[in-house]
Image (cartoon, rainbow, N blue to C red):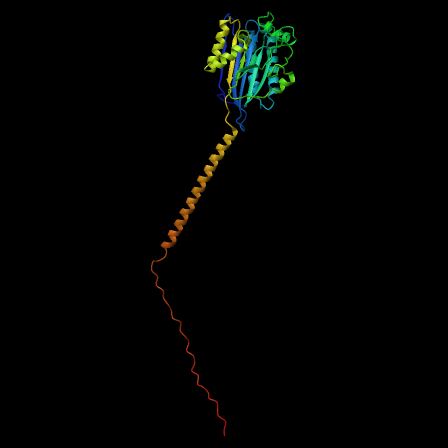
Length: 344
């Protein structure tokens, strides 16, 4: 992929330490590319990470995660996006683990991660931990990712009802994270309906995005305090992406702001049609051929006129024609010979 300065879709991001005075251990990165020199397919990569660990460990882990994954994917051809996402995340986890193993001040550090990779109009996702990815489409909001927490597992097994999960004392026990001794299982399920099984959710990868869609990546500092229906209401009513994010952060802080709050919001708009671009090229090409033909015709007409003028100017306007009479040769005189009469 080739890095470009501006994203093909509007995007905004915000991060806030919260109201408890803790260090901001969240990190994010948004990168824009075009696919290659041969194709101008636009690409947008958003990576968000929530650090885990005391002192500076969490912010170091989150920084490593965002930086390594962004760099690794920037070198990709994007031909196998799911594989590239999985490999980049697991390698980032190993980098974090190695750093923690060699630096006693960083021991025990880890991070969550949420990645949204938009290639053209197709969405590919990958997550580890409880940072989330949402899709807002029209009047609905869908949580595309699945939390890797004790609470989520309890709900899936029927041990808790969803309404019991909010405020549960075990709500922040994470079951997967980057920096673990063994590479974590990267979750590439993309959930569009509650009754879909894992296989169906994997097939959803490469989801075609529609004009008007919004993709939201956020850390649990937001989702712990602002539920999905309120997020939807804010996204629908906000005048801009920036206003929407500032409103969401303000809501979380009004309710305690007990954790860092980070969010990335992408607005999907129409992409220029490749057929439109082809038609424009053909139109300008035909116009160029027409102009070239007219120019050639004018040159030919000019040459013809020039030759005609030269040929007429080389002939005198009056001509003297000399007629030489043809002499008729004189024939020799002939004396007629009379036949002799017979003698009597």
